[in-house]
Amino acid sequence: MENKTFIDKVVNSLRNAAVELEELQVQAALGKAEAKDKWEETKHGFTHYLHETKSKVQGEGGERWQEVQAAMDRLKVQLALGKAETSDAYHEQKKKISNAIHDLQLKIKKDEKLGKAYSLLNVEAEKFKLKMESLEGKFDESKVKAEESFEEKKKDFNRFVETVENKLSTDSEGRWSNFQDEMSEAFS
Figure 1: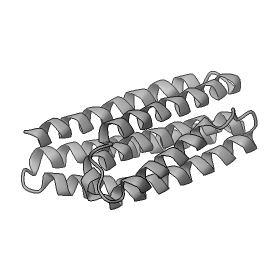
Figure 2: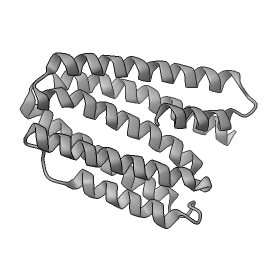
Figure 3: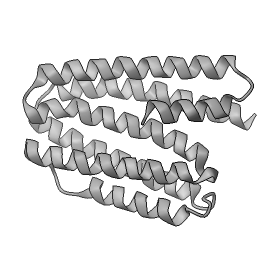
């Protein structure tokens, strides 16, 4: 029963992510100055998610919990760095944040006790990365390329959501194991 509730949470999170991405696309179309503000808001939202996650899983971590905490802290530092006023500054932040997300994902994946947290982190990290991609066009002034990239990523994300939902609803044996494998594959 607990797995069903968790699976529902993940599927709902994926659906909410698709809606948020649609909203972001509309907002990003407004202009570069507003994109800078949206970038800061997006970083703040992901930082808030990390803080909540750290509080929730504090006692659940295994031997590698210290490594996971350190990786979360490094990611929070990258997210807290100053505003990206130029395209170069944005790309530098994006690169550092992406690397920190990847490091955190690896650390959580290694801790077997944090399997559910790993799955949810992957969803939130992918949502964050898609938001970064959609805002990139405003910093680069190549709006058409960014919109095409965003649309392609959004379609891929929606296909992934449907695939996960179908697999979870049809395969009662080993759903959790398959789900973790799918999440790892989709977000790596």
